[in-house]
Image 1: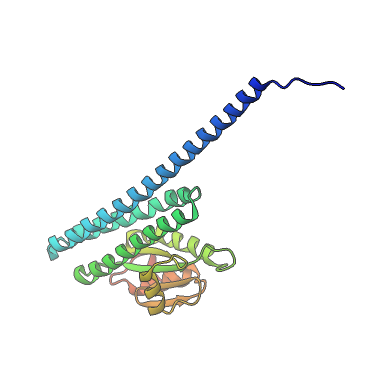
Image 2: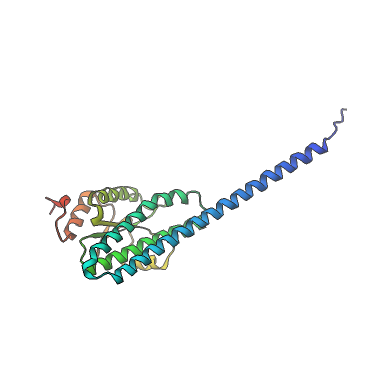
Length: 227
């Protein structure tokens, strides 16, 4: 029988290295979590500040300066939309709780701008059309939502700044969203709220174009021959 001598020093060294790697990994994980929290906080604060600024502009500008407000509002909405892809990529690496918090912050930003756009349209008589798009990204809950999103992106490119699209995930837990769903009786996905008119199920591009064109006060080049 061969008795092997245990190298205690080697085992202690290996244990020390293992613990060190674990601690370093833990510290890196904590650091990444803190960075994600900072990003979400900065995102929420930036959107809130932008919205507050727009509200103050709305109070300050006179009727004759509505064009300034409309251009600023559209720029902010475009910036919000451009940030969507960045937020979605970021959310993939976030925890579930953090995911829901950031998603809720983004959804509230969408609703704030939607309400301000409605107010600007009433006060400034702006010739824009707003669409609220209700969807779900949960697999099996809305098979047509992906296709509807592609169609809306296509129409946004077509109508540019005269078509404002706000996307709302119905699974976000928020009391304002719940009130909106009940008020508009959102029971089918996808659903579109074009101004004050609701449309349920997948709506093809041609049909949405016709609906949007009927809401413009002055003709849009893309609406020629559709009315």
